[in-house]
Amino acid sequence: MSKNKILAASLIIISGVGLAGFSAENKHDYHFNSQDPWKAPAWVDTLKSPYHDEPLTLAQGEELFTLYCASCHGDGGYGDGAAGGALGQKPANFHDTLVKAQSDGSVFWKISTGRGNMPPFKDVFTDEQRWQLVAYIRHLGKTE
Image 1 (spheres, rainbow, N blue to C red):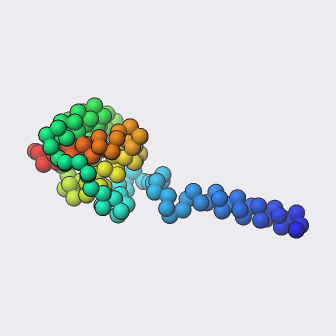
Image 2: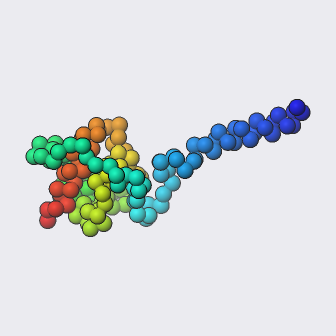
Image 3: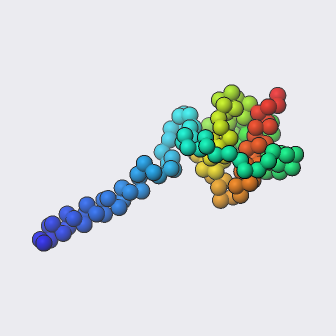
């Protein structure tokens, strides 16, 4: 095989390996316009909490929310936290009908993966803690 053919074959292989990271199966949304609505993949609608909603679930969710989320989303979940206002993009208002219409799996996925100024919490919280947050966010959305 000539040197040119070997070089060409090597470039094709290297290009293929490099592009594999950008396949349709890559579930990370690295490029987004901050004005675009944040849509979770359809498959997350199948996710359901394996934990029962009980007073302790809400209490633990509230504790996590107060420590990690309220500074941006506000104590009442209206997206009016002091830190959130300084970020350039308003955090989610959990009382908004568009947020309420999302599946629990979608909210769980968004907490897990993060986007833009919202950090991913998959490696910070356990699955149970993230489901506790979902339960508390749903509770907030029911209050006025």
